[in-house]
Structure formats: structure tokens, C-alpha cells
Length: 455
Image (tube, rainbow, N blue to C red; front, top):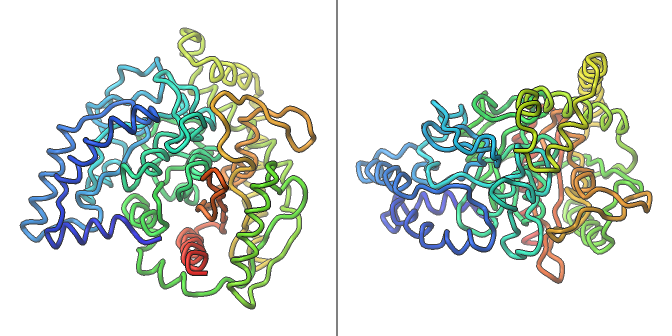
């Protein structure tokens, strides 16, 4: 899939389109998308047009700031924006207007991106993978409004999937970029921990939070990442060059808990992986268990619970009923961890990060490949599904099954669509790389997109 951002940029350069006209087209289409999906919490097209006029002036003067100049990029409503409502999908912050922009918003503005169209809906305070619990109402799938868009960055995935905006920013603490990207059939990337600043982003759990982009192509992911990352992860030409190099060894986890719960989804996923393997003669695929999975899940649970409870402690005591019921329940139930448990979980995290880096190096793996989510986009009202032990499982736990491991580890992880089922719902593949190998894992995903499309 080619870059929409670069196509728009070329049109701006050649005068076949301009940033102002683009904003006007988005303004015309936005009410229908909003009526179907409830993706936006707020919009400001007057401000967006002013930003677009400034970009168009730079193009007319022959001085564009780069490929993102004049390109609309959506913001999940956790990113602080100076003087503009930043609600976290909550009643508690419904009137909050920050005094400055988040660091990544500043970086996008410096690159010329138009971040002023609106703020995007999410699971309240990012504490859920469904986006069904927001003070402003649930986010619905753009193609199937009776189904979940996923979360917590649901609005960000929807506006990209509905082809309203070329890209959007989300946050990912247990899968909150990759899950909605997978359910909505687009690309989403969680960078290596700390590659992108979290300053000015309302936290869920600062040890696990990651900021990253969502777009329809890996090329557009790279263009946004280049603008927001520090230090720079590389550019699109470097990524394209890396994508020409065939992978040597891939690790594909094996076992009943590494298969999708939905049989049709699992079959289509395996067919996609096997097709990709056939297109790359000489690549070695290693099957087996991932190391220390139970310890990862246990430490992740303690850290996210303790840090979220800490951030919300005052509000939980003073105004607990202002939270969405499921978010309040999770915060209260996670507020009982002892300091010794939290510290031990942090020590475990450090140990496991070292373990996985050594595991990647020893195995000479280019990537781990596995599903992103174990089910197709669920219906909005679904609360439980049959889990791996054939007992009812909370949908929130089901959706994060394949993603949350890599938040504790801080590894770079990308999800891309690889097939559609008979109903048009997406099958996605998740690729995970070693620390700092952000551009390499994106190059692998880029190679997948092109080989499978051509194959």
C-alpha cells in the first residue's frame, strides 16, 4: 500500500490540490463519519482552516516544511493541546484546557502537520481496549457500527479506517494502538519504549505507556514517526532500503494459547503467514513457546494497576461516581497492591527486558510474528467470550492477549492488515522486533504489505 501522505504532498507541490481544500473536504465528510462512529469529542474547523492557510502559503512561496506540511493528523484526546479541550474521554476533565501542547504535538506542528481539526474519542482515561466506555459515548466501527472499533485509541483508528484523515496519534499501554488498528483493518505502531516523548500526555501507567501513529500504510507510519521520535528512528528512504533485505529468521509462537480464539480468523491468519513465507525462499521459521510469558503477564498487571491507581487516587476518593463504571471498578480493584509488589514487578520488568534482548540476539531473530487480536471486531454489547480454558473470559482480557506482553518489555511492535473475512472484517498480523529496531520492524511490515499485495 503506497503512502497517502506523499501523494497529497506531491499534489500540493504541483498545485493539483491544497491544504485548505483538503480541510474543506474533511469538514464536508466529518458529520457523516461522526454520526456513524462517534469518533470525535470536539472539532474546530475554523482553527484547522487557519492552519491550512499558513501551510498553503508556505507551498506557494516554495518553502514547505516537509512531507507532513498541511497534512491533517488526528489526536487522541489524551494529548494536551494549548487552550483546547483535552478530556481523556472523561467527565472529570470535560472542561480541562491545558496551558501548553504535548511534546509530540509541538513536534507535529514544527513539521507543518495540521493537528487542529479535532480531538478523538477513546476509552475513558485509556483504561480499556474496547472504547465502549467514554463520557462522550462509545466509539463504533466505521464499517460495522454495531461492532467495536477497539481501544483505547478507538477514535484514532476509526478516522483513519474511514479514510477521513491520513494519520492519527494514539497511545498504547496494553495494546491500545494495535488493537483498534487491527479491528479497523489499518496499520498501527508501538515504538520502542521512550522513543517518543510522553510529556504532556495524560498517563495511564507511565512505565508501560507508549505513543505512536496509526495510518493505512507503513510508509505513512514512518513519516509520522520520523517527525515525533527522539532520537530520530530514520526516514522513509532508509525504511524502503531495509525492506528490500529478506528476513533471515522469524519466530512464530506455537501452542493453543498462541492461536486465535476464532477458528476462521486463525485459519486466515495462518494462510497469510504461510503465503508470506513461501514468497521468501530461504527464510527460516522457528516455532515454540516465548520465554517467561506468565511472569510478564503478572508484572504487567501489577504495574498498570498500581500506577493507574496512583494517578487517579485523589479523584477516586473525591468523585468516584464521575468515572465510567468499568473504569471505576478496575481502578478500585487495582488500588490494593502493596509497595513491595510494585517494586518487585518493576525489578521483574528490568530482568525480563534483558532476557528478551539476549533471546533476540542469541536466536538471531528478525521478528516475532503472531496475531494482533484473537477475535474479529466484537459486537458492541459483548462482555465475555469463551476463553482458552473454555470458560467465560472478559472481553477486555481477550483483546489484550497478544499485545500487552510487549508493553511490559517495551519492544517495538507493528500491526498491519493482511486479509479480510467474508463480512469485510480484518485479519491482522503483529510483528515485534528487538529494542531499538523500530525502522527494521517497520521495513519488515512494509515488505509484507508489498509482497502479499503483489503475490
